[in-house]
Image 1: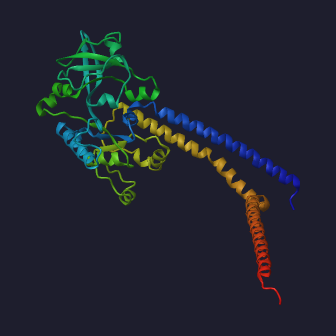
Image 2 (image 1 turned 180 degrees about the vertical axis):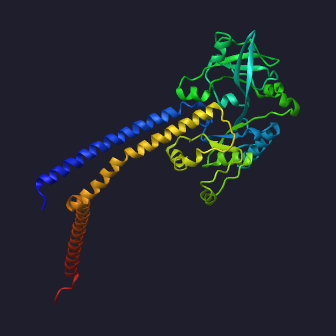
Length: 406
Protein backbone atom coordinates (compact mmCIF):
# COMPACT_ATOMS: atom_id res chain seq x y z
CA UNK A 1 0.00 0.00 0.00
CA UNK A 2 1.31 3.42 -1.00
CA UNK A 3 1.95 6.00 1.63
CA UNK A 4 -0.28 9.14 1.70
CA UNK A 5 2.84 11.26 1.18
CA UNK A 6 3.50 9.45 -2.13
CA UNK A 7 -0.02 10.31 -3.31
CA UNK A 8 0.41 13.94 -2.31
CA UNK A 9 3.73 14.12 -4.13
CA UNK A 10 2.19 12.58 -7.24
CA UNK A 11 -0.69 15.05 -7.10
CA UNK A 12 1.76 17.96 -6.82
CA UNK A 13 3.74 16.68 -9.81
CA UNK A 14 0.59 16.35 -11.92
CA UNK A 15 -0.64 19.83 -10.93
CA UNK A 16 2.77 21.31 -11.76
CA UNK A 17 2.81 19.51 -15.12
CA UNK A 18 -0.72 20.78 -15.80
CA UNK A 19 0.31 24.38 -15.07
CA UNK A 20 3.39 24.02 -17.31
CA UNK A 21 1.25 22.48 -20.06
CA UNK A 22 -1.24 25.35 -19.93
CA UNK A 23 1.65 27.83 -20.16
CA UNK A 24 3.15 25.96 -23.14
CA UNK A 25 -0.21 25.87 -24.97
CA UNK A 26 -0.64 29.62 -24.45
CA UNK A 27 2.92 30.16 -25.69
CA UNK A 28 2.21 28.05 -28.79
CA UNK A 29 -0.90 30.12 -29.51
CA UNK A 30 1.13 33.33 -29.23
CA UNK A 31 3.89 31.96 -31.50
CA UNK A 32 1.29 30.86 -34.05
CA UNK A 33 -0.30 34.32 -33.98
CA UNK A 34 3.09 35.96 -34.62
CA UNK A 35 3.77 33.44 -37.38
CA UNK A 36 0.46 34.23 -39.07
CA UNK A 37 0.92 38.01 -38.83
CA UNK A 38 4.45 37.72 -40.25
CA UNK A 39 3.18 35.81 -43.29
CA UNK A 40 0.61 38.54 -43.96
CA UNK A 41 3.46 41.00 -44.63
CA UNK A 42 4.07 39.21 -47.94
CA UNK A 43 1.74 41.37 -50.03
CA UNK A 44 2.61 39.48 -53.23
CA UNK A 45 1.16 36.28 -51.70
CA UNK A 46 -2.11 37.91 -50.53
CA UNK A 47 -3.73 38.84 -53.86
CA UNK A 48 -6.45 36.19 -53.38
CA UNK A 49 -7.56 37.71 -50.07
CA UNK A 50 -7.43 41.26 -51.49
CA UNK A 51 -9.44 40.43 -54.61
CA UNK A 52 -12.25 38.70 -52.71
CA UNK A 53 -15.13 41.18 -52.56
CA UNK A 54 -18.14 38.96 -51.86
CA UNK A 55 -19.00 35.47 -50.71
CA UNK A 56 -16.83 33.74 -53.32
CA UNK A 57 -13.27 33.04 -52.07
CA UNK A 58 -10.36 33.57 -54.44
CA UNK A 59 -6.95 31.96 -54.71
CA UNK A 60 -3.68 33.20 -56.21
CA UNK A 61 -1.74 30.70 -58.31
CA UNK A 62 1.78 31.25 -59.69
CA UNK A 63 3.47 29.36 -62.53
CA UNK A 64 7.24 29.54 -63.09
CA UNK A 65 9.01 28.49 -66.28
CA UNK A 66 12.62 27.52 -66.98
CA UNK A 67 14.64 29.89 -69.16
CA UNK A 68 14.37 27.65 -72.21
CA UNK A 69 10.65 27.16 -71.66
CA UNK A 70 9.47 30.81 -71.58
CA UNK A 71 5.98 31.63 -72.81
CA UNK A 72 5.08 34.12 -75.52
CA UNK A 73 2.08 36.28 -76.29
CA UNK A 74 0.17 33.49 -78.02
CA UNK A 75 0.75 31.19 -75.02
CA UNK A 76 -0.68 33.83 -72.68
CA UNK A 77 -3.74 34.29 -74.92
CA UNK A 78 -4.26 30.51 -74.96
CA UNK A 79 -4.01 30.29 -71.15
CA UNK A 80 -6.55 33.11 -70.74
CA UNK A 81 -8.94 31.49 -73.22
CA UNK A 82 -8.85 28.19 -71.31
CA UNK A 83 -9.40 29.86 -67.93
CA UNK A 84 -12.31 31.91 -69.30
CA UNK A 85 -13.87 28.78 -70.83
CA UNK A 86 -13.63 26.92 -67.52
CA UNK A 87 -15.15 29.83 -65.58
CA UNK A 88 -18.00 30.13 -68.11
CA UNK A 89 -18.72 26.40 -67.85
CA UNK A 90 -18.90 26.66 -64.06
CA UNK A 91 -21.02 29.87 -64.09
CA UNK A 92 -18.41 32.15 -62.57
CA UNK A 93 -18.62 34.18 -65.77
CA UNK A 94 -21.66 35.16 -67.81
CA UNK A 95 -22.02 37.17 -71.00
CA UNK A 96 -23.60 40.09 -69.13
CA UNK A 97 -21.00 40.13 -66.34
CA UNK A 98 -20.09 43.73 -65.54
CA UNK A 99 -17.36 43.02 -63.00
CA UNK A 100 -14.13 41.20 -63.73
CA UNK A 101 -14.25 37.68 -62.37
CA UNK A 102 -10.48 37.16 -62.30
CA UNK A 103 -7.13 38.85 -62.94
CA UNK A 104 -3.71 37.75 -64.10
CA UNK A 105 -0.17 39.01 -64.71
CA UNK A 106 3.06 37.86 -66.28
CA UNK A 107 6.68 38.96 -66.25
CA UNK A 108 10.12 38.31 -67.64
CA UNK A 109 13.48 39.13 -66.12
CA UNK A 110 16.80 40.25 -67.58
CA UNK A 111 19.83 42.37 -66.73
CA UNK A 112 20.36 45.77 -68.37
CA UNK A 113 22.49 48.88 -67.92
CA UNK A 114 20.73 52.16 -67.11
CA UNK A 115 22.31 55.40 -68.20
CA UNK A 116 21.78 58.94 -66.93
CA UNK A 117 24.19 61.45 -68.47
CA UNK A 118 27.59 59.89 -67.77
CA UNK A 119 26.39 57.69 -64.89
CA UNK A 120 25.56 54.03 -65.50
CA UNK A 121 24.13 51.29 -63.30
CA UNK A 122 23.55 47.59 -64.01
CA UNK A 123 20.10 46.51 -62.75
CA UNK A 124 17.62 43.66 -62.83
CA UNK A 125 14.84 44.59 -65.23
CA UNK A 126 11.39 43.11 -64.54
CA UNK A 127 9.32 43.36 -67.71
CA UNK A 128 5.71 43.09 -66.54
CA UNK A 129 2.25 42.86 -68.07
CA UNK A 130 -1.42 42.25 -67.27
CA UNK A 131 -2.50 43.22 -63.75
CA UNK A 132 0.99 43.00 -62.31
CA UNK A 133 0.66 45.92 -59.91
CA UNK A 134 -2.71 44.65 -58.63
CA UNK A 135 -1.13 41.34 -57.69
CA UNK A 136 2.12 42.99 -56.55
CA UNK A 137 1.21 46.35 -54.95
CA UNK A 138 4.81 47.33 -54.25
CA UNK A 139 4.80 50.30 -51.82
CA UNK A 140 5.48 53.58 -53.63
CA UNK A 141 7.97 56.13 -52.32
CA UNK A 142 6.88 58.69 -54.92
CA UNK A 143 5.01 58.96 -58.22
CA UNK A 144 2.88 56.15 -59.65
CA UNK A 145 3.05 52.76 -61.36
CA UNK A 146 3.51 52.57 -65.15
CA UNK A 147 0.26 52.36 -67.12
CA UNK A 148 0.54 48.89 -68.63
CA UNK A 149 -2.43 49.54 -70.95
CA UNK A 150 -0.91 52.69 -72.49
CA UNK A 151 0.44 52.64 -76.07
CA UNK A 152 3.47 54.46 -74.66
CA UNK A 153 5.52 51.48 -73.56
CA UNK A 154 8.69 53.41 -72.72
CA UNK A 155 7.78 53.92 -69.05
CA UNK A 156 9.93 52.84 -66.14
CA UNK A 157 9.51 52.44 -62.39
CA UNK A 158 12.72 52.62 -60.33
CA UNK A 159 13.43 51.19 -56.90
CA UNK A 160 14.67 53.67 -54.31
CA UNK A 161 18.28 52.45 -54.50
CA UNK A 162 18.42 53.07 -58.26
CA UNK A 163 16.79 56.47 -57.77
CA UNK A 164 19.35 57.58 -55.17
CA UNK A 165 22.34 56.15 -57.04
CA UNK A 166 21.50 57.92 -60.31
CA UNK A 167 19.47 60.98 -59.24
CA UNK A 168 20.02 61.44 -55.50
CA UNK A 169 16.29 61.58 -54.70
CA UNK A 170 12.82 60.03 -55.11
CA UNK A 171 10.67 62.73 -56.75
CA UNK A 172 11.59 61.77 -60.30
CA UNK A 173 8.24 61.49 -62.13
CA UNK A 174 8.59 62.78 -65.68
CA UNK A 175 12.38 62.57 -65.79
CA UNK A 176 14.21 60.55 -68.47
CA UNK A 177 16.62 57.64 -68.35
CA UNK A 178 18.26 55.46 -71.01
CA UNK A 179 18.23 51.70 -71.55
CA UNK A 180 20.44 50.79 -74.50
CA UNK A 181 19.35 53.20 -77.25
CA UNK A 182 15.84 53.88 -75.91
CA UNK A 183 14.69 56.71 -73.65
CA UNK A 184 12.28 55.83 -70.83
CA UNK A 185 10.10 58.19 -68.81
CA UNK A 186 10.19 57.62 -65.05
CA UNK A 187 6.69 57.26 -63.55
CA UNK A 188 7.67 56.70 -59.92
CA UNK A 189 9.91 55.14 -57.31
CA UNK A 190 9.13 52.08 -55.15
CA UNK A 191 10.42 51.24 -51.70
CA UNK A 192 12.49 48.16 -50.88
CA UNK A 193 11.72 46.46 -47.58
CA UNK A 194 14.65 46.48 -45.17
CA UNK A 195 13.93 42.99 -43.80
CA UNK A 196 16.99 40.75 -43.98
CA UNK A 197 15.33 38.05 -46.09
CA UNK A 198 14.08 40.62 -48.62
CA UNK A 199 17.53 42.17 -48.93
CA UNK A 200 19.03 38.71 -49.42
CA UNK A 201 16.48 37.71 -52.07
CA UNK A 202 16.81 41.08 -53.80
CA UNK A 203 20.43 40.31 -54.62
CA UNK A 204 23.37 42.57 -55.37
CA UNK A 205 21.63 44.44 -58.20
CA UNK A 206 18.94 47.08 -57.91
CA UNK A 207 15.69 46.62 -59.82
CA UNK A 208 13.42 48.50 -62.22
CA UNK A 209 10.05 47.67 -63.79
CA UNK A 210 8.99 48.34 -67.38
CA UNK A 211 6.00 47.25 -69.52
CA UNK A 212 6.76 43.90 -71.10
CA UNK A 213 6.03 45.31 -74.55
CA UNK A 214 8.96 47.70 -74.06
CA UNK A 215 11.14 44.72 -73.12
CA UNK A 216 9.95 43.04 -76.30
CA UNK A 217 10.64 46.13 -78.36
CA UNK A 218 14.13 46.80 -77.04
CA UNK A 219 15.56 43.28 -76.82
CA UNK A 220 17.50 42.07 -79.85
CA UNK A 221 16.25 38.51 -79.51
CA UNK A 222 12.64 39.62 -79.50
CA UNK A 223 13.05 41.99 -82.44
CA UNK A 224 13.41 38.87 -84.57
CA UNK A 225 10.49 36.93 -83.13
CA UNK A 226 8.18 39.83 -82.28
CA UNK A 227 6.98 37.87 -79.26
CA UNK A 228 6.59 38.61 -75.57
CA UNK A 229 8.78 36.25 -73.53
CA UNK A 230 7.83 35.65 -69.88
CA UNK A 231 8.94 33.09 -67.31
CA UNK A 232 6.31 33.81 -64.66
CA UNK A 233 2.51 33.72 -65.00
CA UNK A 234 0.11 34.43 -62.13
CA UNK A 235 -3.68 34.33 -61.86
CA UNK A 236 -6.21 35.15 -59.14
CA UNK A 237 -9.18 32.85 -59.75
CA UNK A 238 -12.42 31.96 -57.86
CA UNK A 239 -11.86 29.06 -55.48
CA UNK A 240 -15.22 28.02 -54.00
CA UNK A 241 -14.14 24.36 -54.07
CA UNK A 242 -10.82 23.22 -52.65
CA UNK A 243 -8.07 23.20 -55.32
CA UNK A 244 -10.47 24.58 -57.96
CA UNK A 245 -8.20 27.55 -58.78
CA UNK A 246 -5.05 25.40 -58.72
CA UNK A 247 -6.55 22.79 -61.05
CA UNK A 248 -8.03 25.42 -63.38
CA UNK A 249 -4.70 27.21 -63.87
CA UNK A 250 -2.76 23.93 -64.05
CA UNK A 251 -5.04 22.66 -66.82
CA UNK A 252 -4.74 25.97 -68.68
CA UNK A 253 -0.92 25.91 -68.67
CA UNK A 254 -0.75 22.21 -69.55
CA UNK A 255 0.26 20.68 -66.21
CA UNK A 256 -0.95 17.14 -65.54
CA UNK A 257 -0.95 16.34 -61.84
CA UNK A 258 0.26 12.89 -60.84
CA UNK A 259 -1.90 10.55 -58.79
CA UNK A 260 -0.95 9.74 -55.19
CA UNK A 261 0.23 6.30 -56.31
CA UNK A 262 2.50 7.79 -58.97
CA UNK A 263 3.92 10.30 -56.49
CA UNK A 264 4.62 7.52 -54.00
CA UNK A 265 6.47 5.44 -56.59
CA UNK A 266 8.58 8.39 -57.76
CA UNK A 267 9.00 10.03 -54.37
CA UNK A 268 12.79 10.11 -54.43
CA UNK A 269 13.16 10.56 -58.19
CA UNK A 270 13.95 14.04 -59.49
CA UNK A 271 11.53 14.53 -62.38
CA UNK A 272 10.84 18.10 -63.45
CA UNK A 273 9.65 19.40 -66.81
CA UNK A 274 10.86 22.99 -66.58
CA UNK A 275 7.63 24.29 -65.07
CA UNK A 276 6.43 24.67 -61.48
CA UNK A 277 3.08 25.72 -60.06
CA UNK A 278 2.40 27.14 -56.59
CA UNK A 279 -0.87 28.04 -54.87
CA UNK A 280 -0.02 31.10 -52.80
CA UNK A 281 -3.35 31.52 -51.01
CA UNK A 282 -3.33 29.31 -47.93
CA UNK A 283 0.36 28.63 -48.47
CA UNK A 284 1.15 29.36 -44.83
CA UNK A 285 -1.75 27.48 -43.23
CA UNK A 286 -0.63 24.85 -40.73
CA UNK A 287 -1.97 22.00 -42.89
CA UNK A 288 -0.13 23.25 -46.01
CA UNK A 289 3.12 23.72 -44.11
CA UNK A 290 2.81 20.27 -42.54
CA UNK A 291 2.28 18.63 -45.95
CA UNK A 292 5.33 20.42 -47.33
CA UNK A 293 7.34 19.52 -44.23
CA UNK A 294 6.74 15.80 -44.84
CA UNK A 295 8.35 15.97 -48.30
CA UNK A 296 10.72 18.90 -47.79
CA UNK A 297 13.84 16.80 -48.25
CA UNK A 298 12.67 16.07 -51.81
CA UNK A 299 10.90 19.32 -52.69
CA UNK A 300 13.98 21.39 -51.84
CA UNK A 301 15.98 19.48 -54.46
CA UNK A 302 16.21 21.23 -57.81
CA UNK A 303 17.38 20.03 -61.22
CA UNK A 304 15.87 22.69 -63.48
CA UNK A 305 17.07 26.17 -64.37
CA UNK A 306 14.02 28.09 -63.14
CA UNK A 307 15.09 31.46 -61.73
CA UNK A 308 12.51 32.72 -59.27
CA UNK A 309 11.75 36.44 -58.99
CA UNK A 310 12.81 37.94 -55.68
CA UNK A 311 9.28 37.93 -54.22
CA UNK A 312 9.03 34.16 -54.75
CA UNK A 313 12.42 33.66 -53.12
CA UNK A 314 11.17 35.67 -50.12
CA UNK A 315 8.02 33.51 -50.04
CA UNK A 316 10.09 30.31 -50.08
CA UNK A 317 12.33 31.61 -47.32
CA UNK A 318 9.23 32.39 -45.24
CA UNK A 319 7.85 28.94 -45.99
CA UNK A 320 11.04 27.25 -44.75
CA UNK A 321 11.15 29.49 -41.68
CA UNK A 322 7.55 28.69 -40.79
CA UNK A 323 8.13 24.97 -41.28
CA UNK A 324 10.85 25.31 -38.65
CA UNK A 325 8.36 27.09 -36.40
CA UNK A 326 5.80 24.29 -36.90
CA UNK A 327 8.46 21.72 -35.94
CA UNK A 328 9.24 23.69 -32.78
CA UNK A 329 5.54 23.89 -31.91
CA UNK A 330 5.18 20.13 -32.36
CA UNK A 331 8.15 19.51 -30.04
CA UNK A 332 6.66 21.90 -27.46
CA UNK A 333 3.40 19.92 -27.56
CA UNK A 334 5.17 16.82 -26.18
CA UNK A 335 4.86 17.97 -22.54
CA UNK A 336 1.10 18.77 -22.77
CA UNK A 337 0.49 15.41 -24.47
CA UNK A 338 2.44 13.50 -21.81
CA UNK A 339 0.55 15.42 -19.11
CA UNK A 340 -2.77 14.56 -20.75
CA UNK A 341 -1.91 10.85 -20.90
CA UNK A 342 -0.66 10.88 -17.31
CA UNK A 343 -3.88 12.57 -16.23
CA UNK A 344 -5.98 9.89 -17.91
CA UNK A 345 -3.93 7.17 -16.21
CA UNK A 346 -4.28 8.95 -12.87
CA UNK A 347 -8.06 9.08 -13.26
CA UNK A 348 -8.28 5.42 -14.29
CA UNK A 349 -6.24 4.33 -11.27
CA UNK A 350 -8.66 6.25 -9.06
CA UNK A 351 -11.83 4.73 -10.42
CA UNK A 352 -14.10 6.49 -8.01
CA UNK A 353 -12.89 9.89 -9.16
CA UNK A 354 -13.05 8.83 -12.77
CA UNK A 355 -16.59 7.50 -12.35
CA UNK A 356 -17.95 10.52 -10.48
CA UNK A 357 -19.44 12.15 -13.63
CA UNK A 358 -21.11 8.87 -14.62
CA UNK A 359 -22.38 8.26 -11.07
CA UNK A 360 -23.85 11.75 -10.93
CA UNK A 361 -25.48 11.23 -14.31
CA UNK A 362 -26.87 7.86 -13.21
CA UNK A 363 -28.26 9.38 -9.98
CA UNK A 364 -29.88 12.18 -11.91
CA UNK A 365 -31.52 9.75 -14.33
CA UNK A 366 -32.78 7.58 -11.46
CA UNK A 367 -34.17 10.66 -9.67
CA UNK A 368 -36.06 11.69 -12.79
CA UNK A 369 -37.44 8.17 -13.24
CA UNK A 370 -38.56 7.95 -9.57
CA UNK A 371 -40.18 11.38 -9.81
CA UNK A 372 -42.13 10.32 -12.87
CA UNK A 373 -43.18 7.08 -11.16
CA UNK A 374 -44.49 9.03 -8.16
CA UNK A 375 -46.43 11.40 -10.39
CA UNK A 376 -47.91 8.52 -12.35
CA UNK A 377 -48.81 6.73 -9.09
CA UNK A 378 -50.54 9.86 -7.73
CA UNK A 379 -52.47 10.28 -10.96
CA UNK A 380 -53.58 6.65 -10.81
CA UNK A 381 -54.76 6.99 -7.18
CA UNK A 382 -56.67 10.13 -8.05
CA UNK A 383 -58.23 8.39 -11.01
CA UNK A 384 -59.28 5.43 -8.84
CA UNK A 385 -60.79 7.74 -6.20
CA UNK A 386 -62.67 9.62 -8.87
CA UNK A 387 -63.93 6.33 -10.27
CA UNK A 388 -65.09 5.15 -6.82
CA UNK A 389 -66.83 8.43 -6.12
CA UNK A 390 -68.61 8.15 -9.43
CA UNK A 391 -69.72 4.60 -8.69
CA UNK A 392 -71.07 5.59 -5.24
CA UNK A 393 -73.15 8.40 -6.72
CA UNK A 394 -74.64 6.09 -9.32
CA UNK A 395 -75.63 3.54 -6.62
CA UNK A 396 -77.42 6.16 -4.52
CA UNK A 397 -79.30 7.37 -7.59
CA UNK A 398 -80.40 3.84 -8.40
CA UNK A 399 -81.78 3.38 -4.89
CA UNK A 400 -83.81 6.56 -5.09
CA UNK A 401 -85.27 5.57 -8.44
CA UNK A 402 -86.17 1.99 -7.33
CA UNK A 403 -90.05 1.23 -6.83
CA UNK A 404 -91.24 1.11 -3.18
CA UNK A 405 -92.46 -2.08 -1.42
CA UNK A 406 -96.25 -2.92 -1.39
